[in-house]
Amino acid sequence: MKWRRFTLLASSVLIVTVLAGIAGWAQLSAASQARSVHLADRNQTERILAGLTGQYLQFTFLAVDTEAQSERWQLTSHSAADTARLKAFVSSSPLTGYGAALVALTGKPISYYPSTSALPPATDPGYAPMKLAMLAGKPGLSAVMTVRGRPVVAFAVPVMRAGVPVAVFLAYADIRSWALEGYVQKLAIGPGASAYTVDGQGVVTAAADRSLIGTKLAAGSAVAGALTGRFGSTTFARQDGHGGRMLASYAPVGVGGWGAMTVQPESVFYGSLASHSDRVVLALVVLLGMVVILLVLLNHRRHRLAQELADQRLYDPLTGLGQRVIFDLKLETALARRRRTGTPVAVIYADLDAFKSVNDRLGHRAGDQLLMTVGSRLRAVARADDAVVRLGGDEFALVVEGLRGDAMIELVQRLRDAVGVDVVIGGERVTPRLSVGAAVLEASGSPDELVHAADLAMYRAKATGSGVHVTVLDTGGLARSDQAASPVRPESGRGGPTRPQDIVGLQRDPFYGS
Image (cartoon, rainbow, N blue to C red; front, side, top):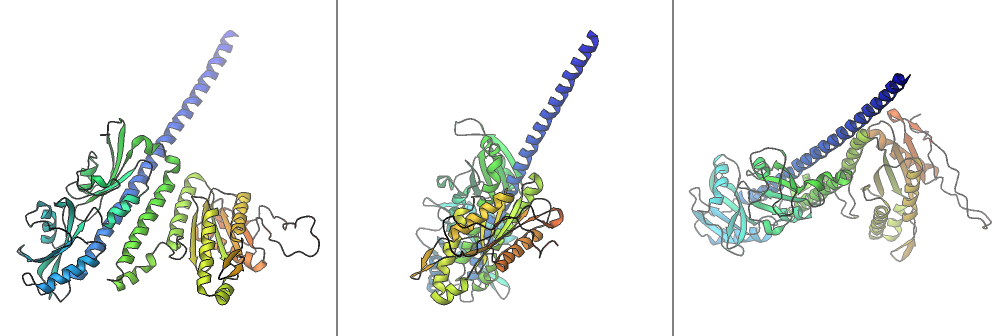
């Protein structure tokens, strides 16, 4: 009997130990997988940032090439006309405003104009990568060169006549003040994280810390990896005396042998798994927004090119909200996260009622003011992680994560209540009202099904006069009714007729999923 009791006890202890071991292993495995996914996300983000930096450099080459291919160059030594044109180009260029020069194919200067100081001499070793690129038939980008304390880089393209190069056009940028430095400073990739771009020699060309520009970046093997065309990440010991290690993700820019990287304390990087993803999305929007702004700045010189790229603009110029591309990006990101975590995703469509009458009665400026007011109120009510966009005209949309049933109803009603506060426009008091449709994806479904369901729900809300219609999508994209709320009752103590009240609840949409 004692043996049996001992065997039972030993078996129980063994089972508990095994289960504890399995649970511990599962926890460690999940943590390791989360770290791997987090690191893979950072590496992918670095590729995108490097690619956008490459696009910025390509846009700069486009502006320089547009000027170089003019037929008006005289190409005679110290031509007054050519010097005047170089001065005009430098004065109007938002990208290369430091100086410009025309150089013979032999390397001898023809004409030049420095905006504030001298240009780098022809013997500067920083021209070496630029010369190699041009010998290979490509536009040339120099390494960082220092002129009287100013770090500059040069962009070079051939001047063509009848398909034959006859000279070289060089445009110089002061990297302490060019636009690339501006948006690198504004990147908010994560706490303690710093973004950098470096030239082919590892010298910093843009950084969050402006004092590092023109110096060699000490980031372990990350610099060597980026400059040899590799993607990835590495860690290295901190050099500031605080101890610990730094994590650096790196990627090649693809132009001039340049590279991009982000450096962050390793402990901070892995300690921010919960909130890191949202900050990364915000950083791209900001960066893409800066790229779009750069394209707008180039509009006066390349109107045709700007017209072709107009559909890539990310932000609505009137309300400051995102446009369709931001909506699509946020929705794809949210659905990808839902597939990993099961977090519900919702799309909210909102249409401003009677907007046309405001335009007709008070004018388009009043209509614009109303749209700006509605946009700011929607943004104020929405959570920080929710995407609020203007789809066009008087239609707005939101992408929301993590809310189900009643919580979605509360959010939708808060949006309507906030927008519905009176506002004085053009000397007249206006009461904005929204018709809101929402679709919540709690199971499986595609982006198109979710967007379509939200669109139909909005039209259902407008058609019935309820103001709100919320649809929940089951597996396969079918609509179901979780509950139906009664009309909102008027406050007690008020007699007489009352106006129709909004019906707020989860409704089965007869136009969808039946």
